Length: 165
Image 1 (tube, helix red, strand yellow):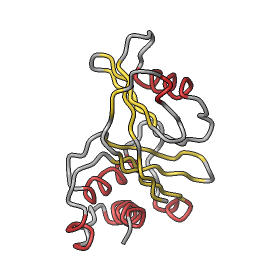
Image 2 (cartoon, helix red, strand yellow):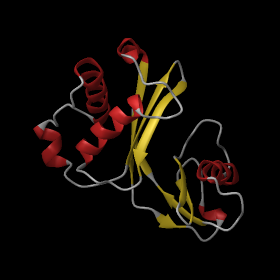
Image 3 (cartoon, one colour):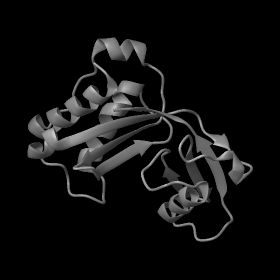
């Protein structure tokens, strides 16, 4: 079972039975490390839910299961996914690599790196390679807006992801 299948199975099982799927032994043994994970749901090409963690709290398969269910049921921008929508959902799973500090905007490439902006307790993240985000300046501006940061006094970090479809 791959990561996208695991995410889909977790969402389906949760919506139909209100239970959390078990982790297949094959994944649990191989992927015991902790990494940040974002699970994105799209329907008809439009975002339907996206929830993630910057750093992992659980072994990777469990992080995927938890974030998949949260993307379907807890994204505050959307109503919870209904069981009858399952077949229409496109799911992607982004596994984050460790973040690195950014000294200069020239280090960024929105097709390659995601960004994190931080100021005090505020933090905004934008994944890489998103439709409609073509410049590093746009990417950072969107992440700042998500974090509610309105000035240019913030810390900037970058990270790579491995995206699974």
